[in-house]
Image (cartoon, rainbow, N blue to C red; front, side, top):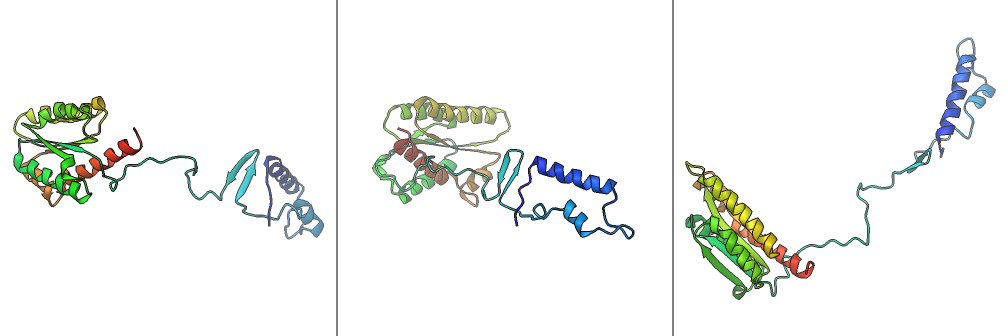
Length: 231
């Protein structure tokens, strides 16, 4: 059963119903509704209802067949880096020596991930710097050298009794960001910023995983994206 209702059709039915109400045409014990009156109020063609997938009201069409809120366009390209196409990709790893008990474990996790995803050992260079504050300038220099597809930045800053923690964290964060923007090479932020040493160790191979390994995987994907899609 189908019925297409537009603004005029709804108004017409409303007028008929109101007119019949005023005239006493609706059924009651004293005024039963005759077949002719029922046919006049509810025409046969108007009472056929259908919940069609498409409703039209004064030029507005809503299509209920659309199951997804997103419009699918076949011509749209989706660019994404791959973690399996690592052949020919070169990486630099900048590691802060300060809090070495943490940064060495982060480096180990990164190197294991590179090996797991078939990055050749000769395509990885590790550069040590005194602390996380010095990571940014070295990362930018490596990025601008043109030798690497991504630079992984590893460090660990643990909060102390003074505001020195905030200064180092802010400088390391902005330094790595600037290195990537200025060099045009992905510079991955792998600097831990923790309240105590337990938090740092938990994130360097402890119960919270190894952030060095996670950042290495990010470096592979970003290097692949730049190399295969954004050159």
